Amino acid sequence: MPKRTQGVLKALGLRHRMTTVFYPVTPEVAGQIMRVKELVSVEEVDRPLSKEELKAERRPDPGFWLEKAAPR
Amino acid sequence: MNLTRAPQKHHDIEEVCSITVALPIPRSPLMFSRTIRRSILDTKIASSALPPTFLLPSRARYLQTTVQHVETPPQGLDPSQLPLSPAAESIKSSVTSITNASPLPPRGPPLHPEPITTPLKLDSSIREMLPLLAAQPSHYISIHIHGKPYLVTAGDTVRLPFHMPGLIPGDILRLNRAANLGSRDYTLKGTPYLDERLFECRARVIGVESEPMRIKEKKKRRNRRINTVKSKQRFTVLKISELKINSIEQLDMSTDAA
Image 1 (cartoon, rainbow over the protein chains, first blue to last red):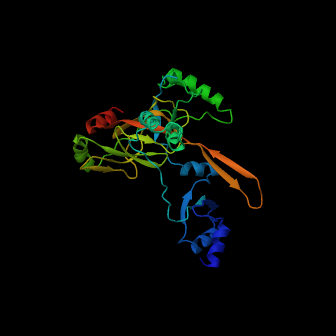
Image 2 (tube, chains in turn purple, yellow; image 1 turned 90 degrees about the vertical axis):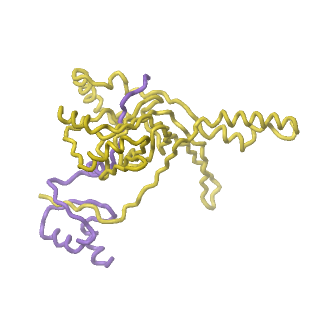
Image 3 (cartoon, rainbow over the protein chains, first blue to last red; image 1 turned 135 degrees about the vertical axis):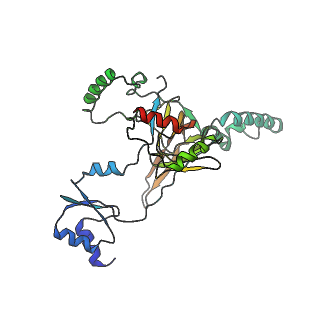
């Protein structure tokens, strides 16, 4: 990646793969996104999610539940 | 108004999971009878030359490999509370609100989820082919537990690659996430998962299996100290007791009633 692109990503706070960051919609941020638009995907949300909420979003469903417990 | 910057594109690394189907767990009785026979033969030949065979390291390891043990039941879960009546539910909610004050909630399996109220949308091809799929004799299903797929049929034994806390042998689990469901000629593919009302898959907890103790010696250079790290993992063993495909008429009836 070119140095300039790396710098833009770093300035946006995207230091690792699969990072998610939240920013208010401003012309400055829009310009930064334009420079790295091939590398990121952008979505508009109502409020920034907390770290825990992001983690819960990524966690897969357990896929099971206890239907009948044995006598204990 | 905010703007999300969502995940950077990259190639997702597929994780590998281990699945053991139809593993004969009680390995020791057979081995033991063989070792006894072998030891008798040995005594005929030279009894003083070797110790009895079951004491030899190669034999002794077989006796240790799979250990079945029943763990003490967890305190948090009471089976009498499982089918919740509305009155009991109000009591339980007050209890849970109190217990939530403690920093760590008791680890246990997820209980009965809320019933799905959204109407079942079925494609015409599913309406046409699902009875044909259900009519075929044996089925397989690829269930997802914690996001990892396990391709099973009814009667299979699955040794999960982890220990499920709060379960004892005899518990019945309902498996409700599946990606594929098929028979010899038909496959129903999920996008990415199937609707959980289409099938019923149940698994019985058989027990907990454990690996032999692993000892890793950690040594740094130019230092005589050796740190030994011991590890002994436990794995929950499930048996797929039931795999049933629900008929579309019943599903339509239940959705109409709801």
